[in-house]
Amino acid sequence: MKTVFINGSPKKKLSISSYLLGIVRLLVRGEVVSEQVRNAGDHERVLQSLKDADTVVFGMPLYVDGVPSHMLAFMREMEKFCIDNNIHLNVYVVSNGGFIEGCQNRPLMQVLENFCKRCNFQWRGGVGIGGGVMLNVMRIMFLIYAGLFVLNTVMSGLTAALPIFAEQLVVVLFFSLGAFFYCLRMGRAVNKGATCGVKFTRVLLPSFLFILAADIFFVIISIFQGGIFKGWLSRK
View (cartoon, rainbow, N blue to C red):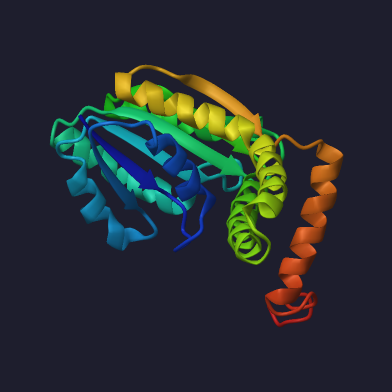
């Protein structure tokens, strides 16, 4: 069985889509190929990888309540390519948005389901995740915690460093629990070629706290990426 993971994020690195696809991939057996579609130059390479594939798992961000435009362009070419080459696939998708509610991803799921009907693919379901940016930040925080754990172990010993690291790890895992559960569940479904349905989850943080944290985060990002007033006063 060959499974092709297609990352539809336009980011070159550290995208939440690649992170979530990596979680799904943990339980997928057989031949696995990872591809990324960022622009039209990627289309031919990715399409060729589908010729002998059984399953495709898309990972993509939610843009304006739907599929990113560069992925729509790829999907149009994929439709023609697969029909011309008589390719039939099982299709899954993991999508994420900056909104806290995972159900914001529902229109994207409907687009993928309709796409499968046009191409005569088997729509196997998807996972829509809310608070994707926060999940990505927490992944980076975990890497920082791991580095500090190693440093503290060297300086203070394992006995002193381990409880602090374990506490931080539990916090990160708790907030990400819904995403981990449904992505791993999808990985099991991929192995069986089974339907996993359409599920929605989110960062496990109360909405009012999420909004506060998001506001602080984006203010900081805007300052570090050129100043908080950049764009407000520039010529359009």
